[in-house]
Image (cartoon, rainbow, N blue to C red; front, top):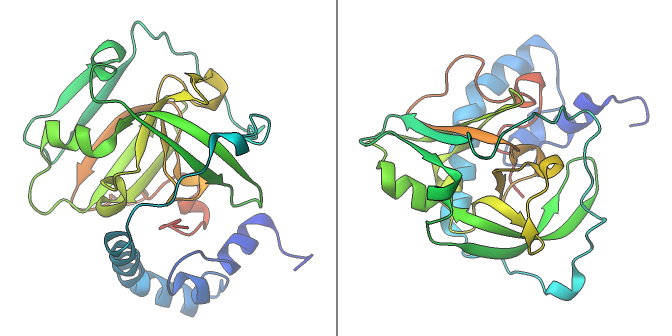
Length: 233
């Protein structure tokens, strides 16, 4: 294990279903098997999300503001909150754009949840913002939509299964630990959910697209480099 690089370690420790068994192998045959098994992996993960209830929340007394680390490789973008707009499009009936003022008029949700990083650390954080399912109700995804793509101001990309995106504890947060979300933690808007690993929780989100298929090369920044796609906890 000491000889494994970060990518190989994550492949070896694939976090859901058969990705756990196949993720660490890199030969051509196993890659082909992995590609064939990906739809099953996704379906298994979606089934787990649909079957589970709410994740228990934590007490505010265990929040440690210093525990949520900031990845040093992040390039913090400059976003003017006044000009910020969240674009929601794809296979939806009512594509829309919402500025921060209109976003904050939507029902507010606050949760104290555990943020788990694939690098081995975790932090208890209070996130406050909007349930992603409330945004979905506004745009109304069409029949056949199975995935949600996320784009960020720093060019980071990711994709989720629809069931995880619509989980009642999946938030687009603009508040952290009772205060406005800091820029280095993803302001003005970031993903936060207790059912996904940290690399699935995009910062500086500017675009959400509901789609029936993930485009070629569009699974996500880290996923295209070998990280496990579902990224569930």
